[in-house]
Image (cartoon, rainbow, N blue to C red):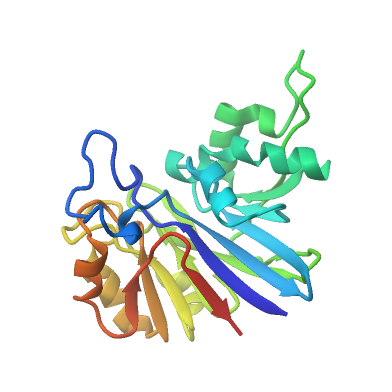
Length: 265
């Protein structure tokens, strides 16, 4: 049973190009510079059957699911409650209608509170409405593995805590891959989840330091510390042109781009 992780989006919160700011330093002629908001899809395949686990529901989710030809989701995992990681949730409606069942969604307490306040209808039908809920809520507990069963086999994801500046966010370890899209530092308690990695997809917002995200230089320092076989930089702002960034990185580090597929043994 093979496992593939697809980067559905790799931009910072405003996307690239950015409304009102355009392309920034990014060359619009390079399709790798057109970036949707951060999300990944983990898929395990057995024969023709597939298990799909989505991480975050970005505001670009409709286009992301269409581009990746996703016809069902077996679960959704959430990293944190910020708008660029949650506000596309209604775009799973078509999948729920086709399947006739709610999608299991795994959230920590702060993310659950925000989504209940802003999108309460996705968990419970409001009074007077005939639309069914979209998600079946499950609580995330740090250090307790999440197992998603599906037609292509099981996908296991281990949640771990990250420091996102003024709040916590979550990273996920899926087999030999770690996904940490929004972080400012890694707490000591989470170090063990970043050891022995084949692939680390890590936040690298821009060259200049930021109060809630890693800079490119800081991301490279963490990569040098944990020594994954391969690292991929995500959450890329309009400052970071794909080719210019790629040419400045160590051999085992590359920028992400939308549609990048990572095959894991």
